[in-house]
Image (tube, rainbow, N blue to C red; front, side, top):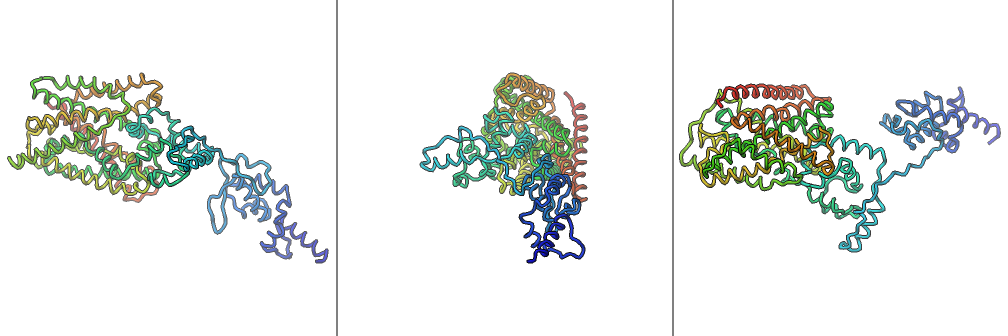
Length: 620
């Protein structure tokens, strides 16, 4: 082309790069501008450097906003935005009408003012996790493939940036809770001896190819999976739906079932099943509210409380758990003492209930020092006892018929309300049970929970009604005390007492861990074992003293424990947390949640007040 025409084109391009086109000048299409300026993005070095400094300071960054604010060419603006994105100084937040919208990155915003003028920037090398000595071991029994696996394990460790690592560490520290760690400590003695930092390290050493809990078959098919002993042990403990069902049964079924027949006498044969159904419905509703909160924020019960109401929310949950576990332990102490008193009386030995309560201190203090204990034997004795009691009651009904019963007892119905809450308490183990399942099985957990609770409601109603109709008004607070005095009954009393003897440290363990955490004792048990053992011994002595003063009125004691210790966890906290965490809820949802909260508060006040009055009026 002629020289004059070529000059004109250069002038037009210079004017375009400076921020505009002269009036009447020929407009350039985007394709031509991009073609002409592809190798001349740094046409104005000073303008480009100014963009690199000013763009990260903008709140919302788009190419058009940069052009309008800094009066530069759109191509040059897009080039600067691209460079800042590659360096990590800005990040994409959304896309609107085919245009990307950026904002400054919090992590890298301090670098926004540096003089970087290249269009591409090499990514920083991500640090990798150290390979443990255990992962370097080669299992020659696998054959030649073992060397290939070892090579891939050592040379392909998972990459993790410091920012991601710091985020994971912070989340693990926030989610850590003594109540959940106690559940894990019962199945792994080594877990108890780890510090919180070591637990985080174990979590961070999970390889990149290992995502969640999967079946052993799917994991063994991958070469990249480190087959260390610790990981094989973790995989072998993958929870099935059947195991989750058994865990729920063990959470709900306990000594409380033995107080139900006498509770039906306190409420009446018609009134009691109605109250039991209402308590079951409210408990199930609160459990679903708690699971909904966990799905949004994750973590344990106390972590959900902390997210909702800060440290006070977490502390209230932990204090309620401590009181609830204390109440259970005290009830078990009285239960064991009364049963053994009757067993010894059968053989002619006269030992008072109070003396037997004090003697249990000698057994419980050493048991509280044990970090690993299994209650499989306790489950067998409980199952045997329930079967024997039902069999005896059905036999009595067949031989002697139905005894006189009350349909509604206006004097003592408040006692049964607290007993019903005590019996259905199991919300503390709902989250750990669901968390132990895989993602696919967690979706089936709500239906499993519903059917389990409905089945228990039916079983509890039948068990209590049959025993009350078979034994009548003379029924004792502990149904075992009303059964015929023979070898079978004594074997059940001895077996169940032994079961509760083993269950005591398991129920005390969550309370102990929370108290140790509040006292800021080191979680590493080998650090100050003597100090921690002294604390546990003091806790045992406190529960024994409470049980000693409550031995004369076991039915009232159980009802007060249900009202004071179980109602907040079962009825009050979950709806409150749900309304605080879920910002957008319907009007009806708010009405139902607050109704459940007020029912819980009313139950707490009414049952506690009426039972304390009965306690004071009862003869010693």
